[in-house]
Amino acid sequence: MTSSHILQVRGVERRFDTTLALQATDLDVAENDFITILGPSGCGKSTLLRIVAGLDRQTAGEVLLDGRRIDGPGADRGMVFQSYTLFPWLTVRDNVCFGLRERGLARTEQLEAANAFLAKVGLKGFENHYPKQLSGGMQQRVAIARALANGPRMLLMDEPFGALDHQTRELMQELLLGIWEEQKKTVLFVTHDIDEAVFMASRVVVMSARPGRIKLDRRVELPHPRHYSVKTTPEFAALKAELTESVRAEVLAAQALTT
Image 1 (tube, helix red, strand yellow):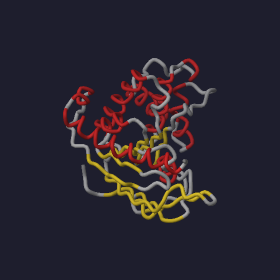
Image 2 (cartoon, one colour; image 1 turned 90 degrees about the vertical axis):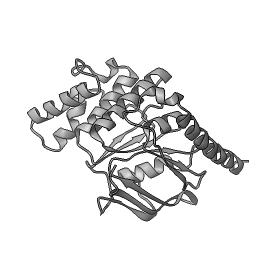
Image 3 (tube, helix red, strand yellow; image 1 turned 60 degrees about the horizontal axis):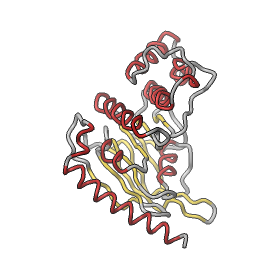
């Protein structure tokens, strides 16, 4: 890891009419960080991610990427959602080529990049299939390949494996972590799954009940390359227990607000 911060979130708030969804939040993200974000439903995890993506606007504060203020979406940030956001009328290859085409790359360059990233996510041989011909896990692999092919500075992921069955989810965790270990992209990853948060991350951030704020920021010192068997180690169990207690306290606090 390097110590340089490529993303700086400074005093960011988000208010919807009379509801404060996200209170003054600060977060520094270093080059090559893989940060997972935990917290109770409605705490502002996805709101924070969407502000970084430029898909939502904060009502106070600022977000800087490489020292430049984020005012909208950009190719320097690749977004992967929980839903399968592929174009159903395009083939797998052309879905991955879409952003490259919009950037004006020659068709030969588009195809070279698309084929390389589809191979990287294990979809060689499926280039000419359509999304409806793929399983949910395979569609998310296409979405990840599409995001990576654009060469983003950061990868932003909003519960990308939340709709998958348990076995597929674990395989996708290993796939993405392997890509990160190889490419060292900087990643912000929202999840409700504490096991997933610990297994994937170099840092885990826990947010409080609404209005959300960062209440805990833990570095994960588990070694790389990280094999699924690390989940059986005492170190993993200890960090999971700490995070479970922290998240549980916020879930109870959120429930208290509604009673």
